Length: 249
Ligand code: BGC
Image (tube, rainbow, N blue to C red):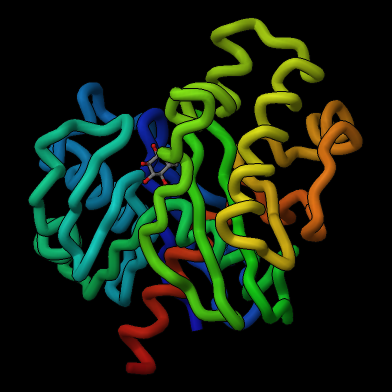
Protein backbone atom coordinates (compact mmCIF):
# COMPACT_ATOMS: atom_id res chain seq x y z
CA UNK A 1 0.00 0.00 0.00
CA UNK A 2 1.21 3.50 -0.83
CA UNK A 3 0.90 6.52 1.46
CA UNK A 4 1.94 10.07 0.68
CA UNK A 5 4.66 11.20 3.10
CA UNK A 6 5.29 14.95 3.40
CA UNK A 7 8.17 16.39 5.41
CA UNK A 8 7.75 20.08 6.25
CA UNK A 9 10.86 22.01 7.21
CA UNK A 10 11.90 25.64 7.56
CA UNK A 11 13.42 25.75 4.06
CA UNK A 12 11.77 22.97 2.06
CA UNK A 13 8.65 20.83 1.88
CA UNK A 14 9.29 17.38 0.40
CA UNK A 15 6.74 14.79 -0.55
CA UNK A 16 6.59 11.38 -2.20
CA UNK A 17 4.29 8.38 -2.25
CA UNK A 18 5.88 5.68 -0.11
CA UNK A 19 5.34 1.95 -0.36
CA UNK A 20 4.95 1.26 3.30
CA UNK A 21 5.81 -2.43 3.02
CA UNK A 22 9.33 -1.58 1.75
CA UNK A 23 9.85 2.05 2.79
CA UNK A 24 10.73 2.87 -0.83
CA UNK A 25 9.62 5.95 -2.75
CA UNK A 26 7.34 4.79 -5.54
CA UNK A 27 7.71 8.03 -7.48
CA UNK A 28 10.46 10.66 -7.43
CA UNK A 29 9.95 13.10 -4.59
CA UNK A 30 8.80 16.66 -5.20
CA UNK A 31 10.40 19.46 -3.21
CA UNK A 32 8.89 22.92 -2.90
CA UNK A 33 10.50 25.86 -1.16
CA UNK A 34 8.82 26.57 2.15
CA UNK A 35 6.81 29.78 1.63
CA UNK A 36 8.51 32.80 3.19
CA UNK A 37 7.46 33.10 6.83
CA UNK A 38 6.15 29.50 6.84
CA UNK A 39 2.69 30.59 7.99
CA UNK A 40 0.09 27.83 8.38
CA UNK A 41 -2.15 28.85 5.45
CA UNK A 42 0.76 29.27 3.05
CA UNK A 43 2.27 25.92 4.05
CA UNK A 44 -1.17 24.31 3.69
CA UNK A 45 -1.35 25.63 0.12
CA UNK A 46 2.03 24.04 -0.62
CA UNK A 47 0.77 20.75 0.85
CA UNK A 48 -2.24 20.98 -1.44
CA UNK A 49 0.10 21.50 -4.41
CA UNK A 50 2.00 18.34 -3.49
CA UNK A 51 -1.19 16.33 -3.07
CA UNK A 52 -2.45 17.56 -6.46
CA UNK A 53 0.89 16.83 -8.13
CA UNK A 54 0.61 13.18 -7.05
CA UNK A 55 -3.19 13.21 -7.72
CA UNK A 56 -3.59 11.98 -4.17
CA UNK A 57 -6.87 10.86 -2.63
CA UNK A 58 -5.66 8.49 0.09
CA UNK A 59 -4.11 9.00 3.57
CA UNK A 60 -1.26 11.47 4.02
CA UNK A 61 1.39 11.53 6.76
CA UNK A 62 3.02 14.87 7.47
CA UNK A 63 5.75 16.18 9.74
CA UNK A 64 6.34 19.58 11.27
CA UNK A 65 9.35 20.78 13.26
CA UNK A 66 7.65 21.11 16.63
CA UNK A 67 5.73 19.19 19.28
CA UNK A 68 2.45 17.79 17.97
CA UNK A 69 -0.21 16.05 19.99
CA UNK A 70 -3.45 14.81 18.45
CA UNK A 71 -2.79 16.95 15.41
CA UNK A 72 -2.31 20.19 17.37
CA UNK A 73 1.07 21.94 17.22
CA UNK A 74 2.41 23.08 20.58
CA UNK A 75 5.77 24.52 19.50
CA UNK A 76 7.22 25.73 16.21
CA UNK A 77 10.91 25.77 15.24
CA UNK A 78 11.93 27.58 12.05
CA UNK A 79 8.27 28.01 11.09
CA UNK A 80 5.86 30.80 12.04
CA UNK A 81 4.70 31.03 15.67
CA UNK A 82 1.12 31.07 14.37
CA UNK A 83 1.46 27.28 14.25
CA UNK A 84 1.34 27.14 18.02
CA UNK A 85 -2.18 26.07 18.95
CA UNK A 86 -3.10 25.35 15.31
CA UNK A 87 -4.84 22.09 14.56
CA UNK A 88 -2.38 21.17 11.81
CA UNK A 89 -4.09 17.89 11.06
CA UNK A 90 -7.43 19.57 10.46
CA UNK A 91 -5.80 22.27 8.37
CA UNK A 92 -4.15 19.74 6.05
CA UNK A 93 -7.24 17.54 5.85
CA UNK A 94 -9.28 20.57 4.84
CA UNK A 95 -6.92 21.65 2.04
CA UNK A 96 -6.00 18.24 0.68
CA UNK A 97 -9.32 16.52 1.31
CA UNK A 98 -7.53 13.38 2.53
CA UNK A 99 -7.31 11.80 6.00
CA UNK A 100 -4.03 12.99 7.52
CA UNK A 101 -1.73 12.46 10.47
CA UNK A 102 0.83 15.02 11.64
CA UNK A 103 3.81 14.12 13.78
CA UNK A 104 7.05 15.72 14.88
CA UNK A 105 9.76 15.59 12.17
CA UNK A 106 12.35 13.84 14.33
CA UNK A 107 9.78 11.31 15.53
CA UNK A 108 9.04 10.57 11.86
CA UNK A 109 12.73 10.20 10.99
CA UNK A 110 13.17 7.90 13.99
CA UNK A 111 10.19 5.76 13.01
CA UNK A 112 11.61 5.33 9.52
CA UNK A 113 14.99 4.27 10.93
CA UNK A 114 13.35 1.81 13.32
CA UNK A 115 11.23 0.19 10.63
CA UNK A 116 13.53 0.30 7.59
CA UNK A 117 16.93 1.68 8.62
CA UNK A 118 19.65 1.53 11.25
CA UNK A 119 17.29 0.61 14.11
CA UNK A 120 15.52 -2.27 12.39
CA UNK A 121 14.78 -5.06 14.86
CA UNK A 122 16.40 -3.23 17.80
CA UNK A 123 14.82 -3.57 21.24
CA UNK A 124 15.95 -1.85 24.43
CA UNK A 125 16.24 1.94 24.47
CA UNK A 126 17.04 3.53 21.12
CA UNK A 127 17.71 7.24 20.75
CA UNK A 128 17.57 8.83 17.30
CA UNK A 129 19.00 12.34 16.88
CA UNK A 130 18.48 14.44 13.76
CA UNK A 131 21.32 16.91 13.68
CA UNK A 132 20.65 19.60 11.11
CA UNK A 133 19.36 23.16 11.46
CA UNK A 134 18.27 22.21 14.96
CA UNK A 135 18.58 18.96 16.87
CA UNK A 136 15.52 16.75 16.90
CA UNK A 137 15.18 13.61 18.97
CA UNK A 138 13.07 10.50 19.02
CA UNK A 139 13.15 7.87 21.71
CA UNK A 140 12.06 4.24 21.39
CA UNK A 141 11.60 1.78 24.20
CA UNK A 142 11.31 -1.82 23.03
CA UNK A 143 10.40 -0.47 19.61
CA UNK A 144 7.68 1.85 20.90
CA UNK A 145 7.98 5.58 20.29
CA UNK A 146 7.87 8.00 23.23
CA UNK A 147 6.63 11.01 21.23
CA UNK A 148 7.78 14.64 21.34
CA UNK A 149 10.94 14.26 23.40
CA UNK A 150 12.65 17.56 22.31
CA UNK A 151 16.06 16.59 23.68
CA UNK A 152 17.75 19.14 21.43
CA UNK A 153 16.58 21.71 23.96
CA UNK A 154 18.58 20.33 26.88
CA UNK A 155 21.14 22.77 28.20
CA UNK A 156 24.84 22.01 27.96
CA UNK A 157 27.26 24.40 29.63
CA UNK A 158 24.35 26.81 30.09
CA UNK A 159 23.35 26.84 26.41
CA UNK A 160 20.61 25.09 24.47
CA UNK A 161 22.19 21.98 22.94
CA UNK A 162 20.94 22.62 19.40
CA UNK A 163 22.37 26.13 19.45
CA UNK A 164 25.79 24.72 20.39
CA UNK A 165 25.97 21.45 18.53
CA UNK A 166 23.66 21.44 15.50
CA UNK A 167 25.02 21.38 11.97
CA UNK A 168 23.88 24.98 11.63
CA UNK A 169 25.99 25.93 14.68
CA UNK A 170 29.00 24.16 13.11
CA UNK A 171 28.60 26.16 9.91
CA UNK A 172 27.70 29.51 11.48
CA UNK A 173 30.62 29.40 13.89
CA UNK A 174 32.97 28.01 11.29
CA UNK A 175 33.92 25.17 13.60
CA UNK A 176 36.37 22.51 12.47
CA UNK A 177 34.90 19.02 12.49
CA UNK A 178 37.14 18.29 15.47
CA UNK A 179 35.85 21.27 17.49
CA UNK A 180 32.26 20.48 16.58
CA UNK A 181 32.67 16.79 17.45
CA UNK A 182 33.87 17.85 20.90
CA UNK A 183 30.61 19.74 21.41
CA UNK A 184 28.57 16.83 20.13
CA UNK A 185 30.47 14.50 22.46
CA UNK A 186 29.55 16.64 25.49
CA UNK A 187 25.92 16.44 24.40
CA UNK A 188 26.05 12.68 23.90
CA UNK A 189 27.69 12.24 27.31
CA UNK A 190 24.80 14.08 28.92
CA UNK A 191 22.19 12.09 27.02
CA UNK A 192 23.86 8.84 28.06
CA UNK A 193 23.91 10.00 31.66
CA UNK A 194 20.16 10.75 31.52
CA UNK A 195 18.87 7.86 29.40
CA UNK A 196 21.47 5.09 29.16
CA UNK A 197 20.38 4.09 25.65
CA UNK A 198 21.47 0.84 24.01
CA UNK A 199 21.71 2.36 20.56
CA UNK A 200 22.13 5.93 19.33
CA UNK A 201 21.37 6.69 15.69
CA UNK A 202 22.76 9.95 14.33
CA UNK A 203 20.64 11.35 11.52
CA UNK A 204 19.97 14.67 9.82
CA UNK A 205 22.33 16.60 7.58
CA UNK A 206 25.45 15.27 9.32
CA UNK A 207 24.59 11.63 8.59
CA UNK A 208 25.68 11.60 4.94
CA UNK A 209 28.63 9.24 4.47
CA UNK A 210 30.89 12.00 3.14
CA UNK A 211 30.30 13.82 6.42
CA UNK A 212 30.34 10.93 8.91
CA UNK A 213 33.92 10.09 7.95
CA UNK A 214 34.93 13.51 9.26
CA UNK A 215 33.78 13.00 12.85
CA UNK A 216 32.36 9.56 13.77
CA UNK A 217 35.82 8.28 14.81
CA UNK A 218 36.10 11.16 17.29
CA UNK A 219 32.96 10.16 19.22
CA UNK A 220 32.87 7.62 21.97
CA UNK A 221 29.75 6.31 23.69
CA UNK A 222 28.81 3.38 25.87
CA UNK A 223 25.84 2.77 23.57
CA UNK A 224 26.37 1.52 20.05
CA UNK A 225 26.56 4.65 17.88
CA UNK A 226 25.68 4.46 14.19
CA UNK A 227 24.77 6.89 11.40
CA UNK A 228 21.20 6.91 10.12
CA UNK A 229 20.61 5.07 6.86
CA UNK A 230 17.68 6.91 5.30
CA UNK A 231 19.00 10.47 5.51
CA UNK A 232 16.92 12.96 3.53
CA UNK A 233 14.05 10.59 2.97
CA UNK A 234 13.56 9.52 6.59
CA UNK A 235 10.96 12.21 7.40
CA UNK A 236 8.73 11.35 4.44
CA UNK A 237 9.03 7.62 5.06
CA UNK A 238 8.32 7.91 8.79
CA UNK A 239 5.36 10.21 8.19
CA UNK A 240 3.91 7.62 5.82
CA UNK A 241 4.47 4.87 8.42
CA UNK A 242 2.61 6.95 11.02
CA UNK A 243 -0.31 7.54 8.63
CA UNK A 244 -0.56 3.82 7.98
CA UNK A 245 -2.49 3.75 11.25
CA UNK A 246 -5.30 5.62 9.48
CA UNK A 247 -5.81 2.60 7.31
CA UNK A 248 -5.18 -0.19 9.79
CA UNK A 249 -6.57 1.42 12.94
C1 BGC B 1 12.42 21.42 17.34
C2 BGC B 1 12.04 19.97 17.20
C3 BGC B 1 12.47 19.44 15.85
C4 BGC B 1 13.93 19.72 15.62
C5 BGC B 1 14.39 19.31 14.24
C6 BGC B 1 13.90 21.57 17.09
O1 BGC B 1 14.26 22.92 17.19
O2 BGC B 1 12.13 21.89 18.64
O3 BGC B 1 10.65 19.79 17.36
O4 BGC B 1 12.23 18.06 15.81
O5 BGC B 1 14.22 21.10 15.78
O6 BGC B 1 13.69 19.99 13.25
